[in-house]
Image 1 (cartoon, chains in turn red, orange):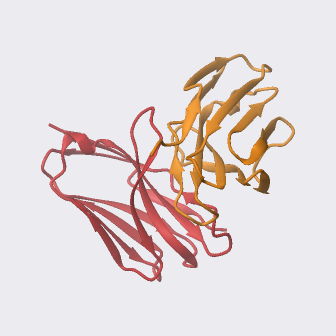
Image 2 (cartoon, chains in turn blue, brown; image 1 turned 180 degrees about the vertical axis):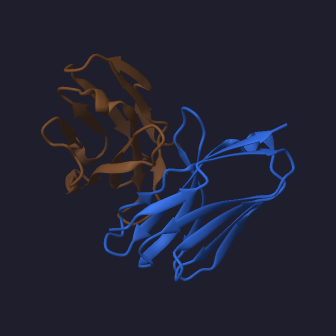
Length: 113
Length: 113
């Protein structure tokens, strides 16, 4: 059974700092991995999607990497801003059910001005 | 392009009462998902529809939860009777087809007292 773990559960950093969020999964048989952002009272916004054949994806100040063999992904945020404060969730799509996303519990990020 | 719409945004009920949530997916999206997100956890899939047929409802507590998607567009999720542990955010998502990227609505926050 696929399980997704995110560490740390919460993180507080000063503005301008570069930071890394971690995601690990137990079964390497995945179609893709996706990082989402969730603001309080809002739905999920997709940030980056990495296919199983890819090693990384970049969008602006965000860079996500995928190491399928070790069951790990990282989300790197450069030059953090207070507007980056949100909960970040990672989700994998296992190969045994291509439609079902399995989510981690998220990392709650606070960027202090 | 309009996003996924959900209503109501917030609902407070007493245990043993019933409640219904409504979702309008992105136009043209054949696949619709209902997720339950308990505070501090990632979303968990409750049920998935392909057009108006159920693809997966393995994690839906069928003794109290029901969902329908008549005419393959809008969907309603009902809880009857509600329990305290049903307090959560209920997220609706849609995708063009099974396995395509999912787009999430803002969610309905349910509090059962």
